[in-house]
Structures are given as structure tokens and as C-alpha cells.
Image 1: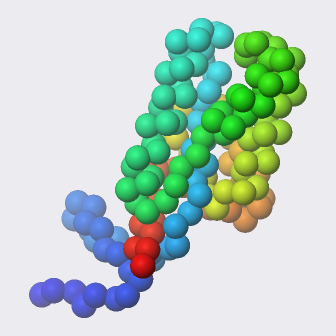
Image 2: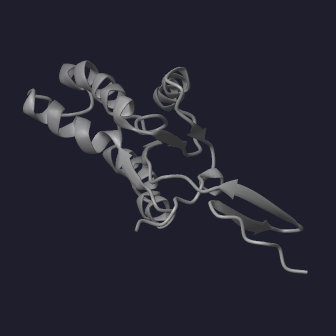
Length: 147
């Protein structure tokens, strides 16, 4: 027996169960996860952590949203302030404040796996702002199609 379609609701088959989720408007989603954690300052490991966050951009887009990574915006600020590496005082001065300013403009956070004090702080701040924090891409609702 076929289920009747309900406008604004999408049904997703997850194994034996069907889950229904309300479709939402398109959101600006901050991707939050480890950046420096576990890298010992190794630039290749830092780049790999950034790559894991950036890898979420297309899947988030395919769900009808836009993804943003805080480092995309904070690193140019740090560089312009004279920061030359992750150990620079400018990094400490601007990294989290820029990320938190960006968070205020976002509609939601997608927290990717991995230990990260900074990502946990971003999620706590998002919740305090009343913004949803998704712990899985599967939990991110599909946006209603644009006209």
C-alpha cells in the first residue's frame, strides 16, 4: 500500500524503518570538527582535518543547503593581521572570534566526528543561540526545493 504524500514532508527508508522529516528552508550550515587537534602542528595533518570538513560541502549542498567552514574566513583575517602559522599570536587572537562571528550568521551546525575542544565549544554556542546541531549528515533535513 502506497503512503499518501504530505507536502513539506520527506520519507527516508533507513533499513526496516521509514523516517519522516519535515523539509526546511535552505540553511547556511557551519561544518565543525577537528582542525588542529591530533596534528602536533603537522601541516599535512592540519590540511587533512580541513579536508574532512570541506568534504561535507557537496553532500550538504545536495540536501539543499550551503556549507561553510570557519577556516575559510578566519585564515585570511589571520594572514592579514600578520599571522604566519598556527602558532602565531594572531592565530589565537582571531581564530575563535572569527568562527564565533560566523556562527552567529549560520542557521545550523553539522558536527563531524573527532575530538575537538573548539568544535565542541562551537556546538555549545550554537545550542545557546537556539540553533540546531546535527551530529550526522543523515540527520540534516532536506531543504524544500527552490521555486
